[in-house]
Length: 169
Image (cartoon, rainbow, N blue to C red; front, side, top):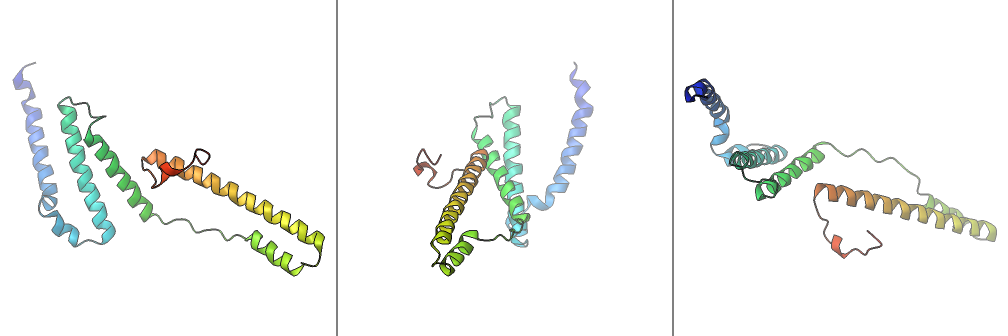
């Protein structure tokens, strides 16, 4: 292949870079000045996007130079910045409203206190309270397991996670 064959591609690249520079001109100035005029959430988005763009450019430059990027610090930084994208998305989308539920344990306590004279009813209600507590403990364990799985997928370690016993894991 002759060197003269790539001149049209180089000219096109030069024009594309000029267009990119024009599009990025507002951001190439003082990013602090730009972000100071934005609301807090937009400021966070801008800072994360700029960080991601810089890390992506570094990652691309390393890949072009043949560096193994999977174990490079730039790859871990890209992963960390992506986690910030997820956090911002989580803040932008509000949590669904909780469903109103009946606190059966409290209701049973009221009834048991009211019917304290009847031993049979009192025993049944005490047994029902024990069942409700067991259900709540199982539900809490499932939620803890799900939360731990979500955190392990996102790469974040919970504070104090290493202090848990083997039975809790």
